[in-house]
Length: 188
Image (tube, rainbow, N blue to C red; front, side, top):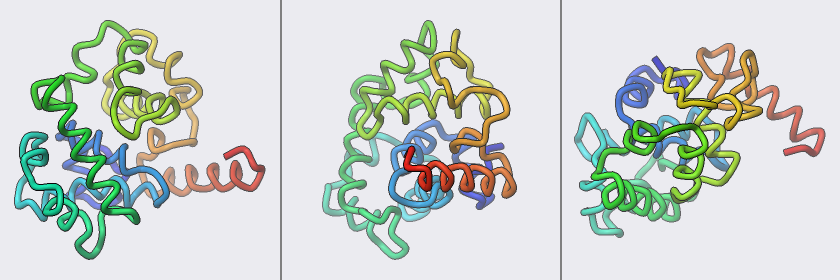
């Protein structure tokens, strides 16, 4: 089971709900990773659902969804902007993948195709796409052909660089320490 949020119910949702996992990755910017990965759980709880639905999120009026994401504690430090981005992501999932987020990765021939699909999602640049491929491979055993090469350097075995490597409170601290080293060295 995924253990990035470090909250059992939030991690359980991420482990079983592909849309929640994509939303968590979208939220993983300018805030602690465990807070980002707890975000989908907060959204689901506030919506009164056990699993997120792209169609339900898209059907909500923008202002109402912004209020849901902004309620204390806010899902993100920039709740209005991220609420809009989540709705854009869900619209894309609804229109291009029939509302099934797992189709983003389940219907690809190889990791390069997955990488290209991920880069088209709102909020997913090259690094985030590579990290997400590494997360799928390392934590969920979803490993399209050449996944390690396409996700490099994040998909390498034994790294402690990103959310893809967080499997416990200890590895969360190791990833955080690595990121702090990179920032101190001016690399990130």
